[in-house]
Amino acid sequence: MTKTAADIEDLNDYEGDLPEAQDDDEAEDDKPAWSGRYSKIALAQGANLNRSFEYIGYRSECVDCKAAGKPGRKDHQFHAAAEKIDERWVAGPEAAHIQDLLDLGMLNNTKQAKERLAREQKMADVRGVEKSIECPTCREPIGRDARGQLLGLCPNNHRNGFEELKPRTLAQMKKLWANALPFSKAQEIERAQRRPQDEDERRQATENQLREAAQAMKEGGEAMKEAAQTIKESKK
Image (cartoon, rainbow, N blue to C red; front, side, top):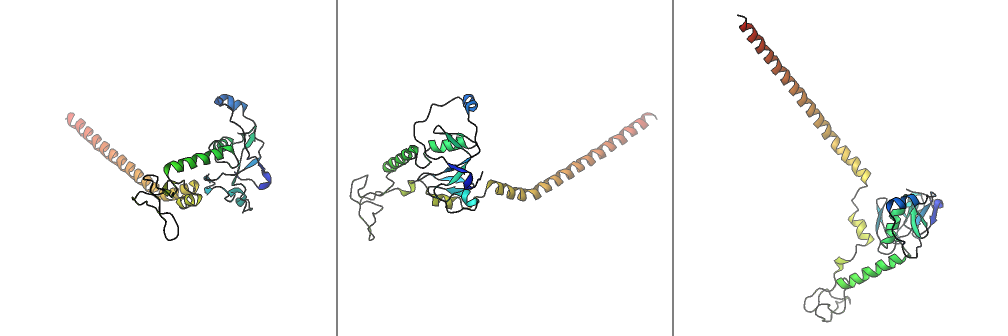
């Protein structure tokens, strides 16, 4: 859902602990009404998201502002039909989705995002993602190439750095999904491709039904003839 910048209220900042979970029925009854105002959502570093069939991330251009004829805005990445009340995203059709993004540490300027980045850095250190000056396996010092870059192997041929274990960047995600089509467009193409085949199948099915009906009539006529001949012979 897209709104112009004039319809948007910035409600990104979040601080404080999450309240205890509620039962679904109780949460639905207590759910506040949405005012209809859209919120600007800013993504944190390393948070990549597919929105409006376009991959966006930290400091990328807002897809909704661009669609409204106001390109170049990078302080937020999209507009959500959601509002924050008492430090939680609870009002609006997309409130639950935005709250999930918050909990996952994907919203900028939140403690959840800082915690996620710290966890990812710790995991990268454990995996040995970045090259180091000392081999983590045999503790031999790592040499450098002519350009001063650390080598990918230590003197004992142990790998130095596993860059393939890094999270995919926004540029990599865009390249990976560059040929993917929006769902509606894919459906349209599929229908266009299947229509001739469907018509052929219906035509073939109709022909088969007519053929079976004609065969049944023929067999029924022959049976009637045999019955009449039997009756005629019995009267002699």
